[in-house]
Length: 336
Image 1 (cartoon, one colour):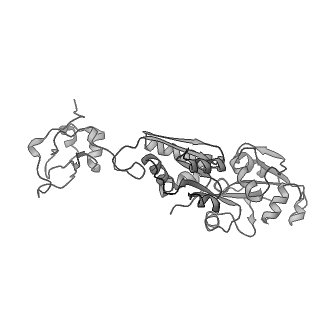
Image 2 (image 1 turned 45 degrees about the horizontal axis):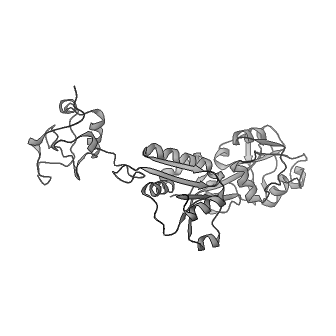
Image 3 (image 1 turned 180 degrees about the horizontal axis):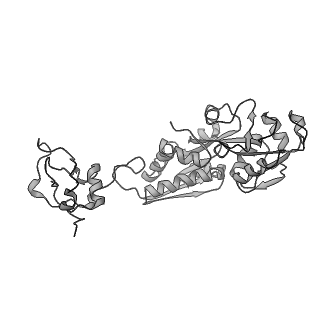
């Protein structure tokens, strides 16, 4: 039976300065079973992640014997410390509170972070940006979430905002529409019913059909906040998913709708119009030239020290390691 818990090879223990040692030297494959390494332990030895105290497991050159005495699997750990705080396992709870529009982004980030750090629980309370900012200020949450930039007075009161992503919202029309460009003002007037026919904005005559998301949708909240049409939109259809909006616009030659940039990229059944002459792309969202966008902000208190778990989550969320998660959640990552 393989010994997976301990290796005792005191006879081969030598000084780390000995010229006959190579640090962590790879064993021959046939030595694995003779030493009694489990597959997991062997992988950790190869990675240099096994230690005795502060010293790494050292293998003798030209031999298949481990030279660190009484080294157990418990002494081995991953050195992937991007979001785990080094070799020490993170534990604790991280509370986030705020923007409902950040639901998918925060959901994706906390899910991955908790998979990587099983001793940590990350919570998300979707109370709205204002409440999230207040929670960061009064300390009831580790990290506040805001889908708008902090105001001058909020920063003056000791808060810091770190943009984790940008929310680019594409304005989509049927693939056969002759309309290619709209201003923010025209878009607002279309969705509030002031403009009702495509001929009023340079298109072929036809009654405009406005397709949007249901009340409570983060995408709808973002669109209405940016176009200043909050609670004023007159929609022909209120749908419960971005995919449904795209499908409805694709099936109606007179339809207009909105969807997250990532959901529209590569689609041939609809097209995104330019807004004020600027196409909706990651580049234009990042450089600010595309107008229908807003920041997703992590809010913390200036000078306050986050717990190790909260700091690790913050670092992960703002790192390039989170970029694909953020993009798949429908936003544009800003980490380089």
